[in-house]
Image (cartoon, rainbow, N blue to C red; front, side, top):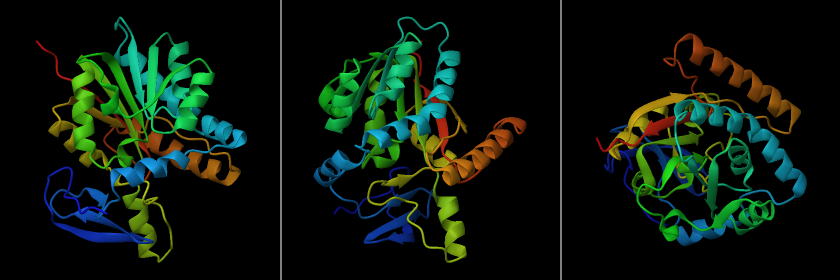
Length: 282
């Protein structure tokens, strides 16, 4: 395991806010960023993620259904933000089984994806999709290759999100769009702790970080992205009826508050979508 400093402010000044099995979740006293410390090494993580995604066909279909609303809403945001973009070249990092790639292709995007799961990318390729079993650095993309890059529930898994986003910035075209979807666990975890309700919401050791709207904007600004905007960005539809009702209730409430306050009130604890742009050359 490796001791790490805060990825946002690079300080080593944190307090433990949660323990999950042998893993410590800490929060930076300087900037408020929540992350796991110490963390497993990259070899452990690469092996761990081979079995992270579901493999049973019914579970794969459940995951597709669960994410469909978020994917549609994200494509609406992308299309609205890039209406005059040509060519339309998109990279989905952490593409999994390729369901977002399929939807993007149907909207006339030239979409490709990468994922660490060999099983997932094999499934995507069997559907005729452009998916590679590799990581971002091994792929060696050209400078300024993509108009849009998406990362759905990826950033929280990365041991060095700063380095990763710097590479994303490099391969985005000037004024290119980045769309990130992350969970926001800390507010709920702290509330449950107050009532002594056991939970493993941080999903350690799979999730190495937990981003709030403020800390994700701090990280993007550090990497030189501009025009950051965070929204609720749709809701998930879990297969379980009880979980679906819960998700729909909080998702609907969060979306309502987001709209009526013009983005000033983002309900803590629900997943959020952040978009940002690379600076123009001009």
